[in-house]
Image 1 (cartoon, rainbow, N blue to C red):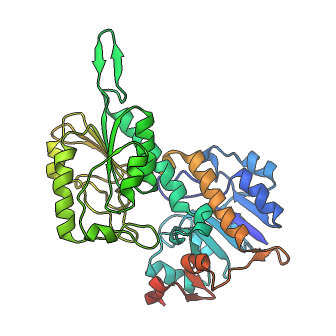
Image 2: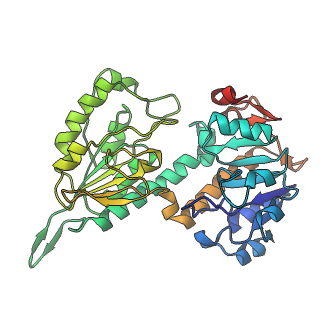
Image 3: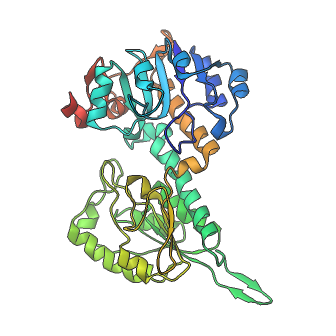
Length: 383
């Protein structure tokens, strides 16, 4: 069976869905791997490296996709009018499409009409068996690290306390908003850089995790916050009243901060606004807000996704998108292993083909379409 790896064409995407390391392992499973020319260059993987690993290098998407039974992607394939190359039209009917597909009912309906069996890896359940194929966690980890590095670079007074003959430079006050995978990595990184770190999260389990990393906890707690986490480990959308009370606590704290890193996401929804324009106005000139949630609209009311701005009172707001993609080599390596693990877990060694049991919790979680029909419960409105 042929597995195709395409070059990512969406703006700002630097990652690739397979690396020379994973290509070798895919070939060992019995697959014929074809990689589009230039697919890995932005991540530091040359065509020669893929060829040495055993992959066939195709000149274009049409060549790579011809006869493919499996397609690996980082982001959803482009359709009609999105680019000069209509990737969706080139994928053979019946192929298994695996990637971070940004799934919605309309797109699921398109995959079904095209006869693609689509697996959206961002929907993988947060269970122990799925940890090694959890693309959100692997990428968020890198995003949290990179956010602090970018924030430290943008902050012009130095991050750790430095004692010199000319005087002492105080440590930066760093506040991490959200203590999921990205937030915890941000806390750890800010601590390593020598900052005075505090953090907040609405989920009850987060308080102890924050403290365990040496940061202080900031936040409002009540009965509602005790149920602020889904069974899958994600934050729930809470009431407007709760967010108002949380904002009061945060507002007093944020005015004293030098670097604020926003990481709060609610699965399937626009990111909640945690930093208001008034909070930004209360911050000191030269302070920095780093908004990892910019891809989902941003946690800061003034964030402009894809841009860095400086407010009238001198606060820098970093609203870059695709934060993991700012570390393309590492992000691609982890993402490629996630996809490899998923495929190898559901691989029939005798038939040398994927076998996705419909009753399996992981398969049920990620499968959007099968056999020309939309099968994911949250997407069936498109059928």
